[in-house]
Length: 275
View 1 (cartoon, rainbow, N blue to C red):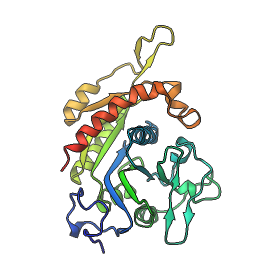
View 2 (cartoon, rainbow, N blue to C red):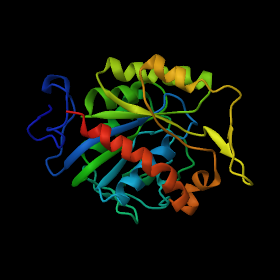
View 3 (cartoon, helix red, strand yellow):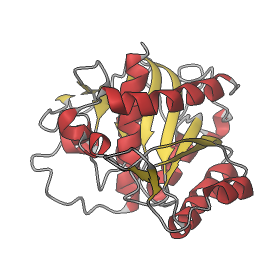
């Protein structure tokens, strides 16, 4: 049974106690829980989660990442800690702590071989998410980011329905087909009364290496019309560039920070308005 009095997000969660089925760990004190979602794989959702965590940490916040993409966990590699393993017992997890002080939990940190597929059905995947929430000693965090799986299936339903999630950041690319799929994720979040902070357009353009002219990557870019139709704000656009694609090996460099820091500033301003 849930207990709002012991929930680490009791002061910020909008769910009624009768609708929140997750068990809570009284050892944790978590400020805001933010999902990073796309509805579509391959648009850089995990990369955006990693960039967001790193920039929040640079700004002095205590940050954790729950890798909710159970069948395709990539957060450990993106965070530069691919070989680290979670310590603990059958009932308690101690997250891996990155060099920046970011706490991370991912299924790849529990398996012997990260190349082996996860062939579990939906209910088992959902239970893993709930276990990562209630059995991990997160301690005190300002922000817990959840790298959500692509699509609107069982795991996304578990996160939205049972975790005290405050809001989501959507990730998209300026292509009509992907925009349509992202729209499904937007409508899912709204149906479940989850605030959407806005959309980050990833791989939106290319910078000419000679003159740094911005070149649209897709033939048509109707992003503004799409955002207006869904009543969403574009938080920022990121180019397709080596600095971002090599995040796992080269880290969060100054060029990427210059592009991403203003996006995080916008997110923080919008978070403050959430009751």
